[in-house]
Length: 436
Ligand code: EPU
Image 1 (tube, rainbow, N blue to C red):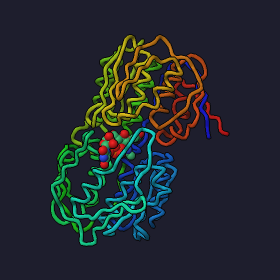
Image 2 (cartoon, helix red, strand yellow; image 1 turned 135 degrees about the vertical axis):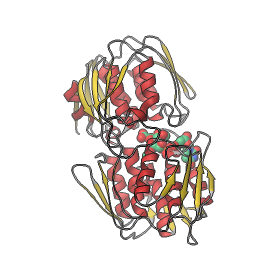
Image 3 (tube, helix red, strand yellow; image 1 turned 120 degrees about the horizontal axis):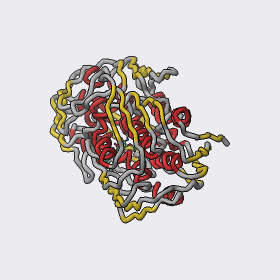
Image 4 (cartoon, helix red, strand yellow; image 1 turned 60 degrees about the vertical axis):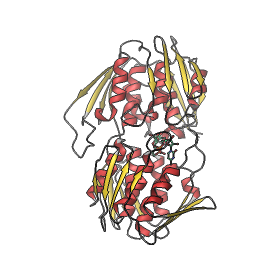
């Protein structure tokens, strides 16, 4: 297992480029199942989660090849077995999003029920309810979701909200299945995340008829067949947001290329409110965009002193994203005053609290709320990465802390950030990867 040694404090200045979105790439890769033939996803990030998903597609019979530039070709001409095996799905929960496409394509699918997760309990009941309302018979057998739609899927009006609002992968699953259902489906309380809009845009390119993209009400007119796609994925808004915090926490200035500021409006507003400069730059990006997103090629984020405190509540898009909660906790730990962070999507997503406290952050957790009393400085310590975004928070804190922090279990960060040390070191970070 690799370890990061990070020397701080540093000041980051220069340019960084955001990669393609992991969370948009995964469901789009699943969409390749819907249309027999060779689809090409362009600009996917080279991450372990993408490799695991490629393994999952290979295991069901697809031929998957990845090019060094990130393009992934998926030949789904023949599906050998419509089964998502436990050994693969347990490594990556997003594996659940092959369920809808397999069901629509093969009339039957078995996918392992995802297991435990470091960020808390993550049920899939709403996915199953939605697919059931499209006419699938669903049972749980030996830890597998067994779905049958041999008589075909039928369009329906489906409410997909749950106790925490909309569901991202649940919307992806039901929307993909509905593209090939007979008749029209209306999904109410659909996820509005840019990754879902990107998937819908890709599905429309394949011949689907989806309207309401980017809104909580999606209308999907079923079609008889879809054709393979060649599609370029959107930039990763969470990676962009992580780079924004990197600029702010190191009191630096980063020119962030390939960043759609329109997908990060809650984040940009929050940063501005605590004294960080966030400016859009450059011509609009090419390609389809969600109606909610004003496309922007670049942005500049700069911060010259300690940030002011803030109160953050995570919410479904366009609210403040849960995937940036940990990173902002690291930033607010150094604010000039007291902040409150409330987690409304994954109430137990606080594994980073104990680790940041080891670095002298002053944090108090009560249920799904953390009060953050800003301190003058963080101090390096040996810490443990526990999940993807928690480990990103530790990297950010380590760059601002005094001394050398060692972060164990770096594989968590490799799941979502491609070679982060090779991208941050050229702008001033001092991160060394040590392999066992
Ligand atoms: N929920 C249910 N029942 C369901 C599905 C979800 O109660 O059937 C609940 C969840 O427990 C949670 C809330 O609804 O409280 C929202 O979960 P959602 O289904 O939206 O999460 P997800 O689709 O499983 C995706 C991202 C996560 C991101 C969340 C929220 C991917 C591969 N994963 O997960 O990304 O945090 O949406 O935005 O797209 C990450 O990248 O680090 C990550 C965890």
